Length: 178
Image (tube, rainbow, N blue to C red; front, top):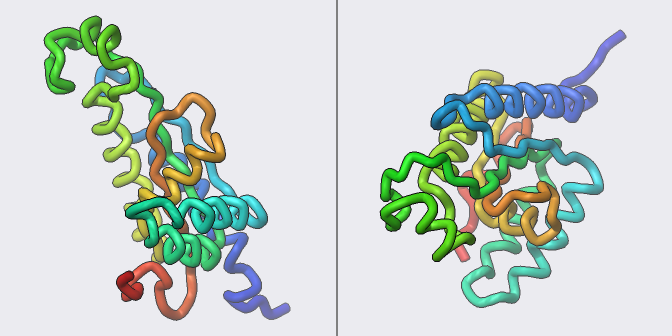
């Protein structure tokens, strides 16, 4: 039997995305507290997210969401990594408030600095797995905004999306500026 790469591509990308999710989960986290939600979407769920980005592209400053929706449609899988906004009780002041209690009382919607830091470390771990497996990927803030609007990771206040592809030319670079 002969199996061509184009025949096994989506299965391979789902496998790589699963490894990316594992890397994000095991990435270091402040105080060992895991405030992350991690998931993969494929198939029609990618189209649903791309449709949402196209819908949101009419909002001021978001015209580039249409380009990013096109990138999503070229992916075999999309990894979503989101963070809940929960303080860690460190009273570090990095969020601009003297104590975690002050931040929670005065700005409950603001993230603890460690929430977004942990999100970034997890995303870095995930994309390194894609690179190790020679899969193309790109971190998309826009698709994270769309995932939030669709409530794809309930309880999360920030999400970053990582579409993954394996074609002769990466669809995520050399993109046309808007």
